Image (tube, rainbow, N blue to C red; front, side):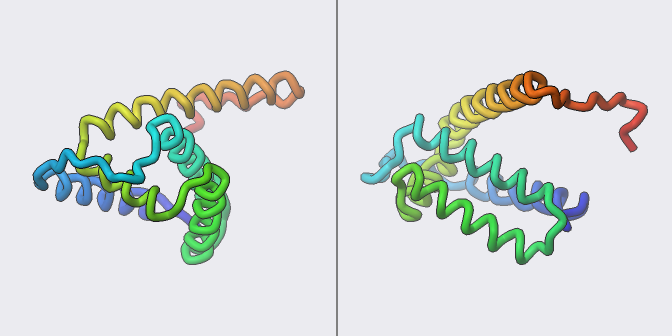
Length: 138
């Protein structure tokens, strides 16, 4: 069960971590096993998609974390990447905020294209996406 409180808490946690990382000096050394940008974009887009699907389910937080960890492991294996490579590459991007911003611009574009394709496929299959008016939002 993910609630509004859990989402807000997660965003504050992310902002706090990013602010701490912003205070560190940048190290220009790229990891020897750094994942190429195109692969990293696909991995992170897949990770965020899996995370959104898990959050949409009504399950206990510890169960959601177990499912997320399993899904992430499967995604990394699918892309031929080790946990260490992923962590080292992600850590590099965390310490190079401008590069991380560029990376996430591409990830957002990738996710937008995926969403458009999914909506087009639903419409073609006769399952139109319901439209919600602003008056329906609590």
